[in-house]
Length: 523
Image 1 (cartoon, rainbow, N blue to C red):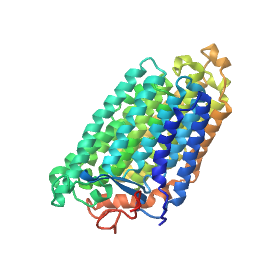
Image 2: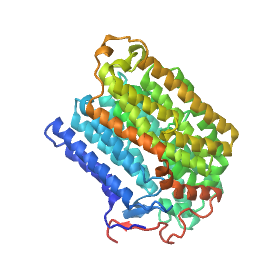
Image 3: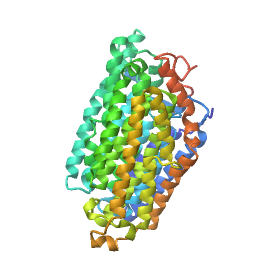
């Protein structure tokens, strides 16, 4: 396993914060844009170096960095990656770079602040994906609220943008309460299990908690609290109502980041199920039911939408339900497909929301009554939208096909009803996408501005080409994703099958349940 002295994960998390601070002191918007783009590409390059340092044949957490943070509560700064999380730093960096490049002409007011907040959001998101201490994870989790609130309220494109920002914040704060209580219960359970009183016996260390069984009286409460906190962020039906509002009122870049980087689904996969596998197995029907309802509800509501951004929001809700069905199978195919689809969200959902932003910037609307005949004046945008759409539908050759295929196989192995629901959801997805695409892009011209609207600029086309290339790379060579994550998925499923038995991270040091540590303090 590769060991490095350079704290690459910490640099990945801190670099966007440093960039955000420097941006505020640049003399003009033009220099801020150039600096932001260069910094985002440097972050992307660093994240690709991270891939080169990772041992893809191991299920263990790697490149771990650890330092004392709050010694009185046994809280540590601990970060690391495994097969579940290794692809998210480069995808986060890529999507952030795309959002910054896409904002070049769309954001004209307070440019430096907009870019700075985007980098703060990137830093918090990377922290969520890398944190291995639950207190640290919760800090990064809550930190994402601040930039999103200001990005939506200050640069939103709808008349109710401040309402949308407040609604999102209230939902996330409400979801954060049960999540925090669940984390505290896990720490208290650790103290109880080792026979020490709080605060000396507390532990928020993820790898330590994996080895400490949760008491029978507490485990169901812990699972439900964690599940509720993550379900709000997914968003999973019936906690979904904030997403259509954000999609309609917020800037396209924020919508791309929120829908492309599904932190709630990652939280379910990383923390809620593995930390309390007994309770997860007993209550997994909740995920199956809510995932199925969310899949079908989101797709059926999307069929009725006449606004592209709202349609994409309900499509995202439907696809999130699809992923939850895969996760709830608790078998290798379903979980592998769920992780694959979670990775796909970054490329497909992020890309299609950016295209919707390009369209709104040109026409001032994404309402179907104001569209029609777009293919005549915007052939490039039409082609890219279609390619992203078929990926969302799961057409063979795209990354969506491999992920959906795995989820459906896993769903049928676990429960025939869930498998049938997943199949029906795929059919509904094709129906709402193709129906809207035909009317908006090939229907009759309704407005004169469409006749003279400009197609994608070279910079915008380049962004779309890069994301589309990833769509087909993942579809034609799915082993890139499945090979990277297979050991971690196998270990994850084995832990659930053992219902609280040996951790997937076996043979760990007794004093520290991790495979290797790079101490930031040099110790």
